[in-house]
Image (cartoon, rainbow, N blue to C red; front, side):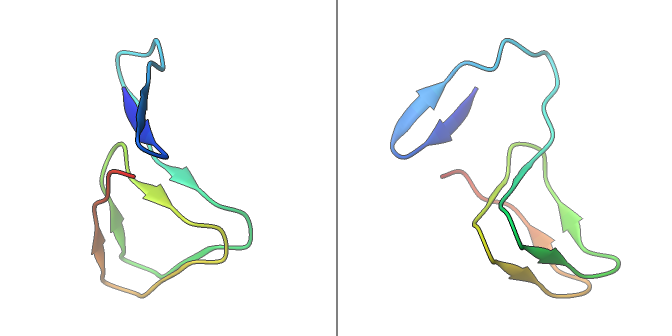
Length: 54
């Protein structure tokens, strides 16, 4: 399950990675936790540990 815009969406998957928006960039050695949502145009800096739920 993933929370999107305040509602929970059933993915039907046992394992799920992350959703990365268009034109986003993720720096080297960054860690993106499973189920994380990264907005369109976001910039994740090198070495960042990113975790979000909607």
